[in-house]
Image (cartoon, rainbow, N blue to C red):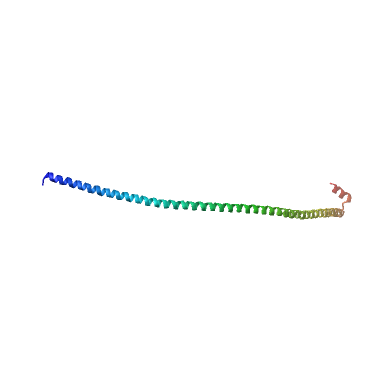
Length: 165
């Protein structure tokens, strides 16, 4: 064969091969384009479903949160009411007990005053008794001193002088 013929055949082969590859690529591009279009529609549908699920969940969460907050608010109001009631009862209880404690305190003070009065009276009695005892002792001591002075031969005048010193 000649070079020209070979070049012609080679050019025809390249052209045919190029056309086949171009057709193959165009077919692949169409397939990929169709796949991407279908895939995009599918992804879009899946995304729409997912978005609706998320929106539904958000609505549920908002509803649950609203319900929880309402219940919490109600419970806090009940607690506040209970605390106010307890405080009122406590105030009444303390007032009643204060009156009772004051009555008990006054009675106890009367008892203490009575006991102190008894102790003061006992102290006065003891002082009076001690005073009489001391006076009697002094009288007896003088008599004994006079007796002892008489035994020693000392006179009563000497004893009087000694007592004055």
